[in-house]
Image (cartoon, rainbow, N blue to C red; front, side):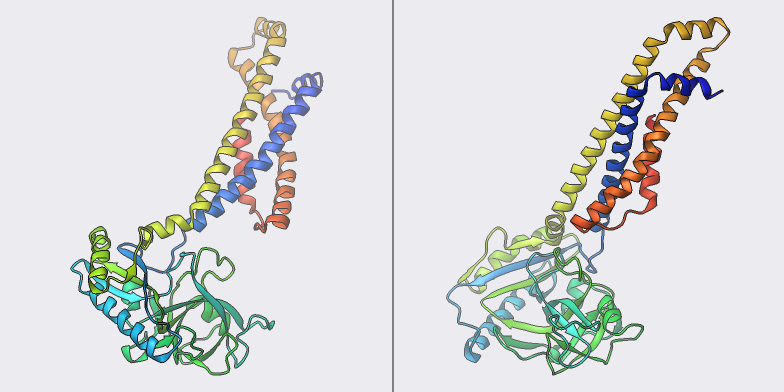
Length: 395
């Protein structure tokens, strides 16, 4: 098929060609970046936390009228109350294991700080490549089994390693387990086991006894999501959290049994409807914004593609209506129906290719703007290829 008649016909309808070309270009630019954002959000939602997530839930509670943990006497009373709670929960028939914990991965409330590989360089206020921002998890010796984290080097804590600290105590435990990501940050290419780390600018070391594959931080910790430090500590505080692993398939029964069991142990406490959360609910809540954004961007893509499709269909229908006589002449000269159809399809394809070429430039320009103002990553070429394929298919 000769392209000369097609381009000659398009030159007679410059305004329509320019408008539909611009529409295709803008659609391609928006769709490519929207698909890229959707992909990033879906990747975030699908990231493994390092936990065995099924049958895991979190209990948050606060004692009423409890002593302050700032003094040794009050701290000892709080420690005993916490140990009573742990014994109660571990004796429930549907519970497989319990550990005291300050937070869980993806939970919005978390302890964060910084860790360095040399004495006194654990403060993030001091620029140093060997300093990393981290999330702290305070647990006991049962935590590895309860959380389901995978130990890849060294060993986890023993019962004698676990210490009870006053609420505002400045002392540090002597041992720590860190994540593989933090190991690579502090000791590139080396094992961290047996090496000291320094917490929050301290001069006294904490010895690394083990390394877990991964343990994610809170949902907001985007720049240090995988840098976690697990410490053998029970905090003496009137507010406590317990990570509970239910027996397989018994999480609902275990969660239901917790309030009455804890109230029977000590009724002077506060437990609300939000006090007991399955990890599935914690994950859903943490990624609610990502899922919402993915849905919104998907709707935007569908609307943009629908409008562009309607524009192409409308313009083609108009041109067909304007060319009845031309079509009749071609048919009289022997052109088949498929020839006429192919003519208009090639014409649409030519317009779509022009719009796609302009759209590729606009797509990368829009991505640069998003990188500058919204801290978005650079868009891979593959997303542009997908966008071009979509608009050409529409054409």
